[in-house]
Every structure is written in C-alpha cells, then in structure tokens.
Image (tube, rainbow, N blue to C red; front, side, top):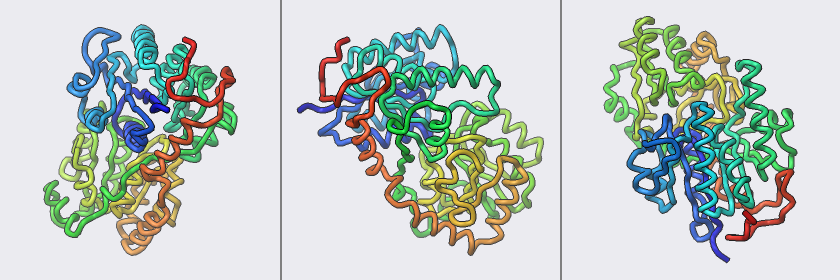
Length: 415
C-alpha cells in the first residue's frame, strides 16, 4: 500500500495557526504520508497576477518573515504558494484563488485535504469537494464569528461555515470552548468533532543556567527592571493596545517587551509616545530567537480579545514563566485561575491588577508555574498531535453528502 497524499491548505503559514499546521505535518510518519503545504500570504505573497502559482524553492524564496515554508521544504514536504490566497476579502480575488485551488488539488490527486484558518478553510473545502477528495478535514483555531462583529458580517461568516461544513468529514477544534461553541451553533454533530491542542516542543524553551541574564543583555534592558512580555502579531485580535495601556498603569520600574510585528505597528508607536512609555517598552518585531528572548520575561501577559488556544501559552510554560491571559475562549484550558496562572478581562485595568499581583508575589507565581508544567503532559506535544492526525485522517466519520467508506491511497475519486 502506498503513502497517503495529504495537502494542508492554509492562508498564512505563520504564527500560531501556522505552527499547528507545521508541527502536525512534521509529526506525520514520512513512510506513511506524503505531505504538501498549499499556502498564500499576508497580502498576495507569491507575486504576479491573480492565480499565479509558485512551487518548491520558488515558493520559499518569496516567504515573508516568520513564514514556515522554508522549514517545511527543508523537511522534504512539497510547498505550493497561491498568490491570491490572502486573508483580505475580495470577491474577484477569492474566485480566482478558488479556481487555482481546484486546479492544484485536482492535479495533486490527494487522499486527504486538511484546511486551516478562515479563508483557506472555506475555499479549500469547496475546492476539495469539487475535485472529489475522499477525506476532508478542517481545524477550527477558534471560531470566526464573534459578538463584536456586525450582525450581517457574523451571519455571513456563519452561513459560509455551515456550507463548508457540509463538505467536511472531520473537524479538529483547538480548545474545549471551540468544541462547545461549534456544537451549540449546530456546525456538526459530535461524531465529526474532536478536541485538539497546539503542539510545541517544550524542550526548546526550557531555560538553561544563566539564560535570564543572557536574555536581558541580548535585549539591552535597563538594570533592575521587572519585565512583562508578550508574543503575537500586532493586530487587534492580540490586543497589543491593551498591553501598552496596562503597562501605563504600572510603576516606572516595570518594563514591557512585545515580540511580533504587524499592521498596527505605527499606531502603537504613536500610542506609546502619547502615553509617555517610549523608555519603558520595546516593540521587538519578528524574531527567530524567541526561545532566547523568553527568559527575559518575569511575567507573560497574553492580552487577546479573542482566541482559540495560543501556542505562546505552552512556550511560556516550557520556559517557566508565570502566566496571565485574558478570559476569552479556551485560554482556561491551560491557565486555570490561581492554580496555573491568572485570568483577567481584556481591559487595561484588569490586566494591570493581575500583572501587579504576579510581580508582587514571586513565591506564589513560581508555584503556579510549576503546577502548569506538571499539568501540561503529553497532550501538547508534536508526537501526540501526529497520533491525532493519523487517527483523524483514517477515521470513519463522514460529511453529510458523502456515504463512502474508508480511504486507501490513490483510490479513484470519480472526478
């Protein structure tokens, strides 16, 4: 029996969503699976007109900072970049991307298509169904419909997801809250939904002796400061504006670090200046040395307005850093209040109070950190994710419009 051909379709192959897709692909047994990553970019990466395709080294060459295509390609995966597969909504561009995806999936004759994120989740599943892919899997990294959205936009997003769900054999839901919401919204029956977790190699983030001092020297931090840090794209979802406003409520000896870049950078620079914090915060931008930067943190503050379950929580636990996270979505799966960290509302005053308590109670903070590491277990490891994917790809759950049985590599799709 030959290898199963799996295509992972993802809009932006970076950040937490990209890391879940990457670690999942890397965890698959290469003797059993042949993996392909089909990705787009932040704003049309890939160059050229709509529908342009780049493959292999050419796709890697145009990768933006933080993009994982180089790691996937180096690991022996096939890499395909679709120029029009971007997060921004565009009727013309999205139709062009859909046509290109249909072409890519038809030519690849994949046994499994596994989609991630919102745009590629909808377009990828429609394209996979159109080309007769035997098994279609989608991962919800949190659900894209929120109370803060306008009613028309929320209903449109929900309607598209319900249509795409009709072409989905199995769902992986990052975090327990995502499972609960999906069931309540009637997106799928319980037999098609399985809880899943971000995968992180925590050994990469374990602190070596002297890492604290080395990290602070690397970042040229002032002597004697307490450091509250965070990691994430500079976008409204991640709440970097909440982070800086919380910092403004803290004493002058508390310093802020933020790792990550994004479209809010100029706005945040202006806000930092307005609040008089230019000497108390560093916007570090994208870094490839996160494991070396993390030990500089005294506290990790995840300030998201909405989330699935971010990988940075696991990275902080691996590095032994006390955790504060906003009380949204599935953060409580890892941050259990008073046991493994603190939860706060996504408001500057609440965040500032939680940070103050953590900094003022180092003994209790360390105890929570140890509890968090002890409870992490194997569920968040790449090995565990690989087992979940193998089981899901070969599972028996079926989309409502498909009564077929289990798949075998290279079977006739009847396209």
